[in-house]
Length: 373
Image (cartoon, rainbow, N blue to C red; front, side, top):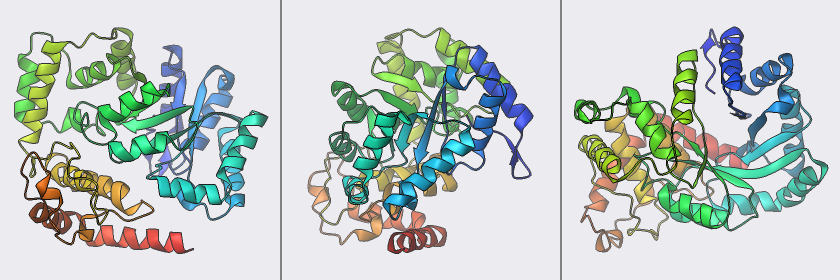
């Protein structure tokens, strides 16, 4: 849940009302993270105060990007247990695990032994990872460890980007439950739809809100285990619970899929590059994540600069090996394989110019410093 803040502090009265409303309605999975300001402590206080800790599942995340040695894992975990007022975590994720090399680095620091010990003691019940990036790397990460679950960004706009449907199906085939984050792309599929997309929803015979359609699309898919929602009002809680209570697997059929594809086309019409995220241009010899760069570049125009910069930063600068557009040496190999015949070299220059801002460069420099430290 996305707790409301006022003056830099979480509004605990409001947060408690929302959590308890969700709990009474049957919601039993609560997601947080070490780096969400005040969130772990707020959730822990609410669950303890109302005596429901053992009636719900807590999901939180190891900030592996802050870890420099094996002792750091224990330090952060102990702090999380204290914040959450508990002695065990139901679902523990490697937060924003970006690539196999990052996982290999954690292995050198003893992550395998540490996780095994925590699971054996009951301090961690289920082990997983959250992911932002392309489908191929996601599938590789799925295979590097015996994960209990995973978490991906997935919605009707990201069906063929991020881990996408390819990643969802791959994890499902491996028997790994998939938790969905960003079902509304941070609210963009509700509050920042182009006028044409709004008209398509309004004209469709079945009357649902854009949020309800986005959730129905997800819950209709049998491979989806759980959908996270950043709710910050009682109205959102009630609306989402009502939608979840009335969706059946397979309910979104061909007609509904066709309508949503029209919505996607209306959104894409506002974008700069006609990239479908197919990945035929990959791998790049210089490690540029071309689909991720174009996805963020497009989202600058459909969702705004902040959202685009955040996405680009997570998919390029946070990786063990940098994968931004500035790596491009214009070899042209990618253009020979692009079925959309995109001038990739030209568009990567544009993406670099619009996304690798001074703020981005500062963030990348800080990441380098943290890695060196």
